[in-house]
Length: 321
Image (cartoon, rainbow, N blue to C red):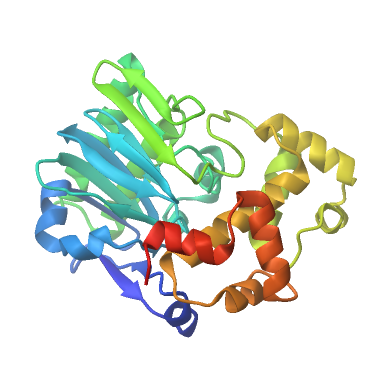
């Protein structure tokens, strides 16, 4: 299913990086399994430890309630609730006993570029939890069932044809899933099966519930994701992308409700929280990693935006050493 990948950077960070690994005899790039199969094949303690996969998790609950944490936000999923965890997000499972559901794991590169763009696979900060209803729920469930059925049907088709079938069926699923109704801002959505609640920190930098965004903002968002450890200046991104700083701020505010500078700073804060909460690096090393001149500047930045020093935040989320 998956394998942990530890690099020198990971050793200092202490957030297990998880790479996709296809099961023996299965096509690379995608896997479909039930939560019962996940319980049998994966160590419960390992699933409960925060980790940072480099592939997508698309999960639906069929029975019971599942607690799941994504980037400091706690969710409780009920029947028919879907969760989409994207590459790079730090997450961990709660107690899987008594919960049934289905899980699709896939690498972004498994799908063709046109599908990836239409499904907004690169929207790393899209809403995590969805509760589709009516025809929308039936359509996405049908797409998942068809994909699950074909994933287990290894016989009868040449391998290369089987892979193409899976690629097309996964495309249908993610295109459907990308258009599912998202929870209201604040992390709560109500439906016939109950409620999904998100608690705590970790609101995505571009906000939950954003249905569409301008091309200007999408280019800016992707540039920030690539460069936030090198620059926190709107002017640098404007120069790189060929826009004025004001244009970037207006596009970002229209898509997220905050200006371009605030968007950049929230991304830096999120990464800082990830490293402080899940890693063992000192504040000084994290400061260097995030592009600060020294630990004092990093501490001032972090406290101004969170109300807490880096060390106080680490102690709060992890408890005393």
